[in-house]
Image (tube, rainbow, N blue to C red; front, side):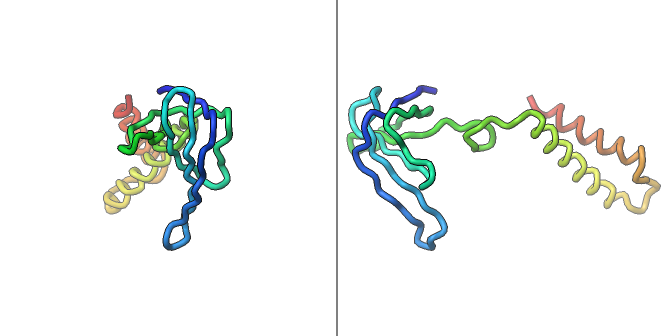
Length: 132
């Protein structure tokens, strides 16, 4: 993804959702890599500043300017997920699936001991096998 540097802030426009639960600030900025205004929205506590760099793409906005689209990593967040956090989430999912399996098999001789851990490990291995 390209990186753009903010050279000038030409306009700011605060925005609030009709129900008042969401707020954004929209900026028209000039970046050194493009002619015309670049429009981007930010949370109120995360302002745009001259000299800051932006990682993402620019799309034509149909009015002679550009709309900035930030680079997204992971599941829509701006940061890559920690591998240990991913492993914990996968393990929690495997445990949840094992509990569901146990509920279905409640009338069998499945015990919540090493046999149950084997079921969790099976779901965990299945999850890991499905991820690249």
